[in-house]
Length: 185
Image (cartoon, rainbow, N blue to C red; front, side, top):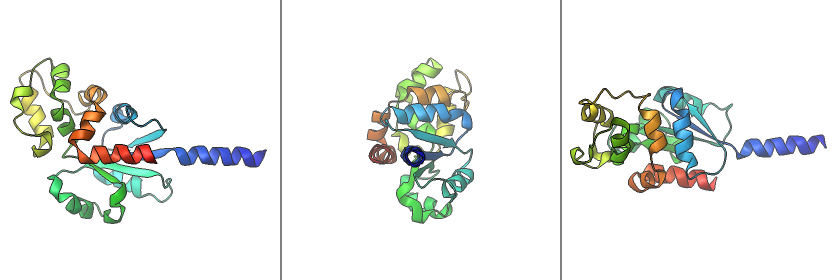
């Protein structure tokens, strides 16, 4: 019976997928809820502050092999390979996903989330596709500055909780690929 307990624990452990995410630990709930809209398996969201910490946690050989990485791209979509090289994770490219260019691009792609959070209509002020905006965090900050300052953590959590992951997957290739990977794993 001891072997059964160990095997059962091991199988349960293997079923957990760890997602290392660049961002403040206070955003864990938002990412869990967002990915949980489509992924019905157990995820362990590891918020890691900055990209270097996220990569370090992701590359740690003592962490399970069921792990993925979600970081800011910080550059145009065409430069994904350059970002992988910069982070020294080219060999892991199949398990790396990007927020294009930053998480704020997701909010800009669903202006109703911004409208709700800041009690204002910003739809007509967003003239480009969200993934085409070079500095979406700065753009969002300027967009809402007439109401109040955008706070990357305090405002991001409720907006993450309001995002529609199906629409994100339609708009952002890496979100779609991440959801597909998580659903199949």
